[in-house]
Length: 328
View 1 (tube, helix red, strand yellow):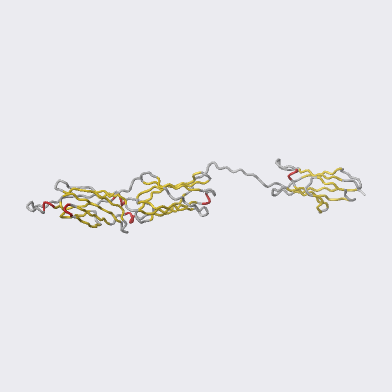
View 2 (cartoon, rainbow, N blue to C red):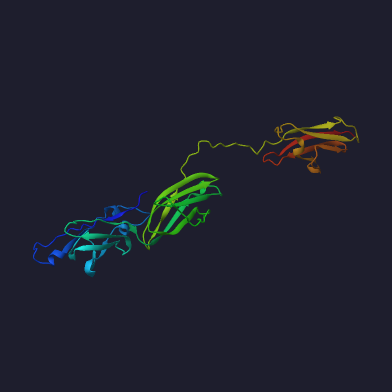
């Protein structure tokens, strides 16, 4: 960035009176001020309006020989001041906007004589102190909970201006960067991080003028499209568990102990029988829990044994059935 410079060109044209007979006429001259300020009018800033930056009037003062002085205001770029004594003049000029805020000032010493026809006065001093208040926003759906923002402010010479640490509203996705600053031009740099990665940023020119607040909204857009994101799909559900029930002995005698053993037949490779919950029912009544083996002496007759087996994964609940016939 370059400084926003206000140049006021002061043209001192000595218009000596035509008559050389009068001593008074040979010791005075007319001061013509040509005020050019196009550079200042073209300046841009953070949300300040063009009227706030535009020069509305000038105030010019001068101190010359024999305690002679003048002071005047003008909205014109060229003004004439007559009957000024020849000699050294200290000139001072200020530029004001329509809100009567002083924008810039400048001083010079010029010697007014028959041999000196012009001089240039540059208004390069920016006046006063103003405020910066920038509201920064971002889309909370595009950042993680560890979102952070880095704000850097540089003056026009590249020197870093210390800013108060911004307080982030992570719920709504916003923060405010604010500071009191000397009048002038600044560069505000913003960087938004999520998971330690830079996801968005902005660079904004800021213009500060006396007693005014340069405020505005800066929306940090996260527009990158990821080309490396991959998704691993893991099915945490499973099919109903199937199995078989073996009877030992296969043909028991009356009053004989029968041992029933359940064996699953479609378990995923990462599971074993020990990972299952296995419950035994006889004629619909729970008779044993958490065991793959059931020992019993059934009464005479035919009995239905059901195994209900499950795992913590959804959809795993399954059953197997065996009819056991005991003789009289």
